[in-house]
Length: 406
Ligand code: NAI
Image (cartoon, rainbow, N blue to C red; front, side):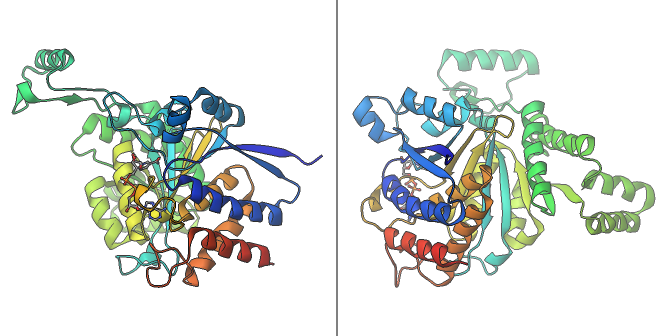
């Protein structure tokens, strides 16, 4: 009997339904071509504004249950209602399934306009910690009783509050744990080793925030040294050799480790990373970073390779196997329903999902078809304003290439 895999789909709001319809053409073609014995049931489940309008709930239980049952889902963009006290649906999903790693590959495709001179040098995969940091939502308004408690507590612990405007200061807490940092780093190293990537760079602001960002850096190095010592060469080892035997010996050790195919583990202060990833992106490969840094870095790097219309993402828990794969852009309401949205981010997110499920040939077929189509300058208006094709026509161009490929 043909095995069936059910994949829940959260189509999303705005351009969500149309980019999903286009993406599905591509996914079905790749599966038919490369996994003819695998039946996939795409099961649409409600979420977002459309779900709220029909059920009164932005994230109905039926959707949570479907993801729990099938472990994976593909998600379109969801409207985040602006209002006091409402938590983002995306954040709720990440928390519910403890999707601690947000994985975002950033690669340039030939034919895509870029604001930098050498976008072909950008080939990175960002591992952003997804559950901690200032994103945890532990914060209090300046005029709340909790803020006063925080003022009193800090004054007791510190001797003074040490802020310029005490009575008008709101507070947010930045939790970063050893366990959370280590599991993120493990996921990044495992990925890098499995894909034969060259390096993992820990990006942090530890020079200023010593017990959160600085601790993150130290714990990441600890994982590398204690759990992967035979497969990695760390910058800490480099510094140690340099101190004891001199810079030439350290350089030779680094060269030998690189020649041996060892994974290089290094770190970079976040602000310097923004500069250096623009000036010399080829120095960076896999990046492991905290939640807020990762948020900024993802969009900045996406801009280098053509913008958010082309940026896929995966929110995963490598221990449980749960994964929600999503285009990283929003609902783009001003272009919804016009067959002009770029479906590439959702298509590439589907390719990541296929990889996660072990369907590597189908995944590669999708990425290759996308690459060839963009190289042929067949693309939507955001990429090709002078001679654009529509959302559906773009998907059909990919389908033709997938079907024709030998
Ligand atoms: P947005 O990403 O929807 O739009 C920013 C700009 O990029 C707009 O000019 C838009 O037309 C363009 N754009 C986005 N995706 C595109 C695509 N696939 N093809 C061509 N052009 C594209 O961000 P914005 O305007 O800040 O947010 C709109 C709504 O989306 C808000 O409700 C926001 O909360 C939600 N949102 C949801 C996200 C998610 O579900 N992952 C992520 C970001 C925003």
